[in-house]
Length: 54
Image 1 (cartoon, rainbow, N blue to C red):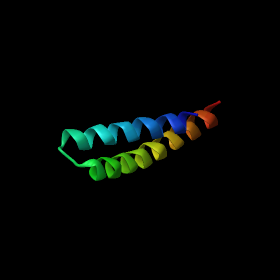
Image 2 (cartoon, rainbow, N blue to C red):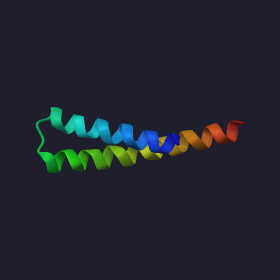
Image 3 (cartoon, rainbow, N blue to C red):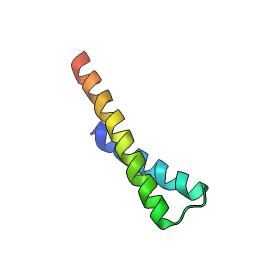
């Protein structure tokens, strides 16, 4: 669940970041995909740490 949340947060952040930089729709999609993947990896690591702690 936390991994999906991080994916959505990362994708939204990437979309708005590209828009702020004046990017086109293709730029926004690329940023959303990149940030979504990066945040997913962070969320996965966080989920593993939380799971292993308890």
